[in-house]
Length: 194
Image (cartoon, rainbow, N blue to C red; front, top):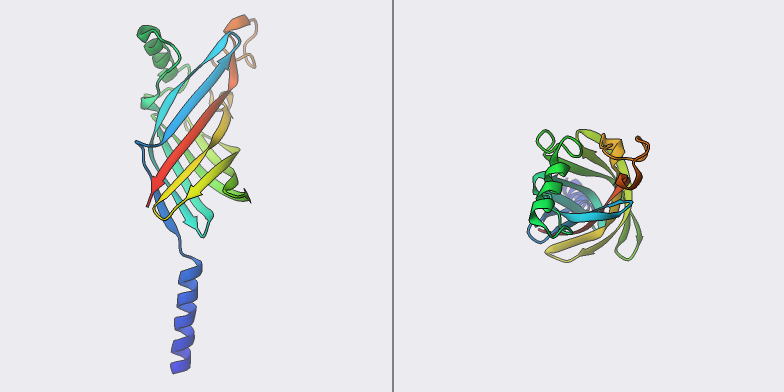
């Protein structure tokens, strides 16, 4: 009987050690998301804020990760005129683009993260925009300490896959210099804590 108890105790300790997962929660005040969109005559950029997010680490590997973006926080940074900057933001929130009134959130759920080298991962996940889900992939850097986690990188998505076709040369002819590129880039630096 004692042997059985000892064996079971050893298995319990081993299992607890090998499946230990640390949960990190996003610090929305320290995290930054910068969007960039290009068109024939130039481009625009701005910020958008995270609403929530978590990363679960298992001995240096990413076990699970998910984030939610608050689309009501989208801003424009490159237009100096407050009037025209606000006009652009209003247009981005409209039905022509992200239809924020109906779809106030964008979400990302990791499918897998493959370690590449020191702190570098190839990440695959589902991004949901306007209720439409699609897979994206991108390289990402990760720094982990006892109490904090930092992830950074850049990913892009084809806006037309999410029913955002306004002034897209892929769908409309003769746009000339009004054509807007289909790809939108997001630079991210996300800070999380235990």
